[in-house]
Amino acid sequence: MVVVTAAGAGSPVVVEALVVLVVLVDVEVTSSTGSVVVLVSATTRSDRLSLAHAVTATRQSAASAPRGATTPAVSRSACRQSGRPPLLYVDRGMTVVERTWVALTSATGARAGHGPHPCQGLYHRPAGVRPTVACIATHYNVDFSEHYLAELLAERGIGFLGWNTRYWGNEAFFLLEHALVDIGAGIRWLREEAGVDTVVILGNSGGGSLMGAYLSQAASPSIEPSLGLRLPDAVLELPIADLYISLNAHPGRPEVLTTWIDPSVTHETDPLSVDPELDMFNPDHGPPYAVAFVERYRAAQQERNHRITAWVRAELDRLQTAGAWDRVFNLHRAWADLRFADLTLDPSDRLPGCYAGDPRGANYGPFAIGGTSTLRSWLSMWSLETSQCQGAPHLAKITMPSLVVQSLADRGVFPTDARALHDALATEDKALELVPGEHYFETGGRDEVADLLAAWIEAHSR
Image (cartoon, rainbow, N blue to C red; front, top):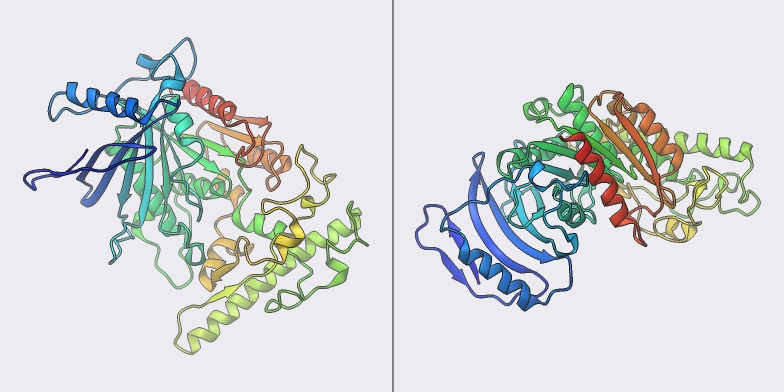
């Protein structure tokens, strides 16, 4: 049974529903910072208890609670056990994780006409507990609402907001300043609604440079507005966080694209055009690749990025003359990092290939980062000349305690990337951990990395 109540709306609406896999325990409509916020809570068990058992436990818990009672905050010391990360129960396998749907507007993002809010995500926490420590993870365009670490960290007593900005699945229109405003809305919700004292920024994968940019801007505002636009006031007043974790993070958006794009493309409108002298898939070159070829190849990758930027600027001028604002364009062949094929470059425990499998097949396929952009989103996200999504300048302003974690079988982020990120951080309280596993720990290691993160968070949030 699900009870839906709108504050001040009279009698609650009772809805009967058959639920498989999850047990809905609460749906409410409330108000937060002037915006309508829809909260939908669900509990799941981390062990294999039957659905009936879970339903019974949920109903008994609800029946014993005073009417209208709120969930009390639980201090970290109350659930700390012998120096281990905080756990709700002695047996973490029995921990019930509650998931709350959070949907918000932001200072520059209104609710869409067909209904959805621009900022959406899931808040994970141990059932019956209001953690005082929580993580927030966001990506440029990947859905992080059900991040693979969310339930694992909630089982360890740490809240986790998997958060999506308005650009989730929509990176072709990405503008950094508005993404940062949307992330700020999530952090405000954690502090003002979820009761969190210590906010941990988790920069995972591409989200590493995005969250680094957030921390940099919150600490010392410095970003410039996108071409032809005004910088919103809200991006100058972002709420601060307390700790930073970089997990298998790419060095920056333009950096990763440039090391992946195929410099052998001779005509940007022809995905089959090839300069054989720069073709990594030409067996005459390797693998393994000679040092001279690697140097020529890397220089040509940067040149291609600069050529696209020059075309983008010229195209914007042409559109402006015609009274047009912007347009989209396609980028072909962006699965061509030499390290995908040559394991002697930046050695690690990885297997040959890329995230999409065979790099040659992926390179000539339709799916790739930066595959579609507007002219302005290219300048904001991908251009080596103009993008403010480059990692190092922002890391140089991060002075809070920071942890860099890198898995050694990652096919797209490499040990040199992790060491460079660690070295670029301004803080003296920083650590670098190299661990087994792939990019998202798809074949194992998630519990171990959750233990690592939880222990570090606990040690830095006392």
